[in-house]
Image 1 (tube, rainbow, N blue to C red):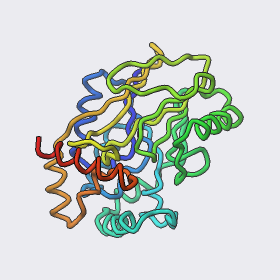
Image 2: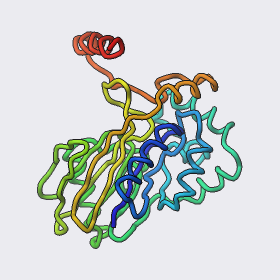
Image 3: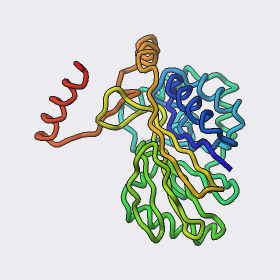
Image 4: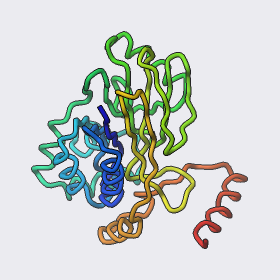
Length: 263
């Protein structure tokens, strides 16, 4: 089976359509969605509709749960809460009903999907040590599962229980062993958190027959997304939220950023 894996769309329809076109070109058999279809971005209803029509196996994310009033979102920023309030008003009743039906966790042929971590949709699994702990927990809770798919960090990641952290190179297939559990994060479709210009939409192709994963970084209509943000009074950082830096690195990154934008 060839699975197209998406996460953290965040209401960015232009980015979503770009990754779906890219994955369709890779001849995907089925779709997996790891949560946060909404929040931040300007087209939550449209994004949910598109993913629902795919017939994707989907789980809920922390942004869905906060918007629906099922989580308080205490760790969320004020910018995130502003987007939650706007999204709550914009969400159609039928879309809200669909989102309420999504489970926290799903299992598809030994592939486990959940948004943040096993047991907590708001948790960030960033480090190799944390990834190893999640795989150890997976071995206890679902010993028949070989792959754990997580989102939430907006960063692409591959970690094996024995091989450890595997460097990700977008566009190049990475082999994974059937006798070893792995954790993978496809990155964010709709909100890049990289120092890059223009921002890219990220996703993952999992080929279980060949034992390969291919991480993707896809260009999309950023200007179209920005027009939609402006139309609804939402900030540009809703689709491109660069990481915080120390003062020296910030100055260097600002110079590089200006160069990128002028090129």
